[in-house]
Length: 222
Image 1 (cartoon, helix red, strand yellow):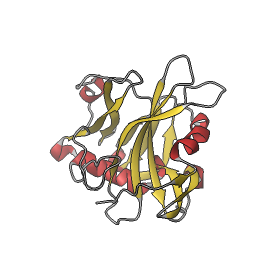
Image 2: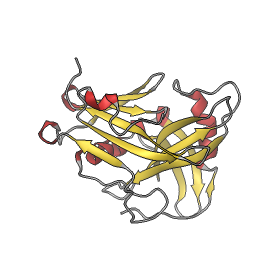
Image 3: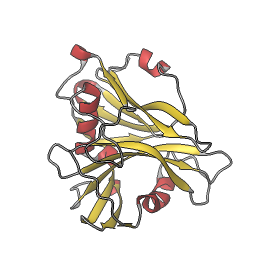
């Protein structure tokens, strides 16, 4: 399991996201800079131990009403070939040195481990504590209908609501970038989904909210 190093990071992750978020088509803010706070998230382990994988939840309070975003991130010790378009920025880590931070939807390591989580082959880890599973992150898969060899296509397509990736056998993996509190059994899971990941975050008023983070359709949708 990955070790969490509590050290300085310059610029901070939130500083990088403050510049990057307004460039996304699903960003709901105005012309001014977002005012971000970390609201939750979780981590996944890279089986090779090389890539940091984090699903960060941030809330922007700059507008008339707060907006909460899901931002999957990967941290690498060297640039990821062919992924310049997905680079969020670089930062200096007090222990690990220079790190390249990427939009994880374009990183095959993150996508592969997210599918492994949905299939039950990986376990969500606490965001800030080493070697500690996160029981608040839930997942489901449909057993025999899942394909163990699902892999992400190189491109991830952003739209006004989130990011969609093509996976093997004509399926799709949908990441919800705008998080809205939802019931335990939201409609998306009754529309032919093969699996999902859901999690919690803290609302600005201190209450806890829950929503779908990702939905997998292992077969082509009609």
